View 1: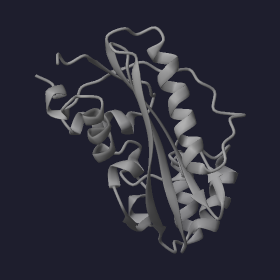
View 2: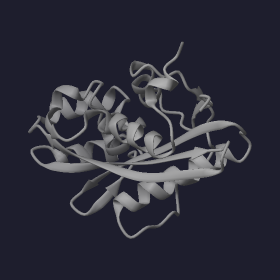
View 3: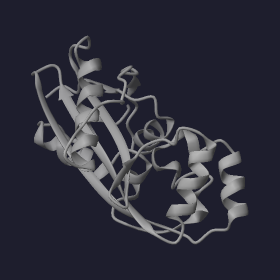
View 4: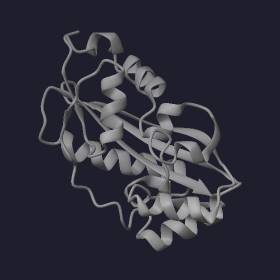
Length: 198
């Protein structure tokens, strides 16, 4: 099967970096989907629904392509947490999270617009937060990173030293699960190696 265009329906530079690090070179087309007001029975299903909305928005006008949509949320104490609204919320969130753990869910949707077929799955990784000080929290939030990312933390950025460990796939925490993407591509009839940049 001929390798189609690969498109990432996400503005996330972290997702793009993960895919490029795995030998892929997707085009980026931002979906423009607003995430507010979407409901689902649990965090995993909510991430899948958001990923589907993003992928569909881009796939509708993109023939002969594989479109990947993703969305990540942190499940913490029964609550689905996306990006903090502001720095005050980011500080409060880190004060709650430190010394505890949550589960980072990332929904994935891949649409093959050549054949009009699609798959949607969610991946989950447990994240353990170090018991960091108020000063460390203040410095991290002041960096501006916390308000730009789901859960108010990164594994591959400034808050990496504040993550004491994970159980599961690290690429999922960054925003896109490479093992899950490979399996989904296989289900759609593609080998990830066929999509490596030439």
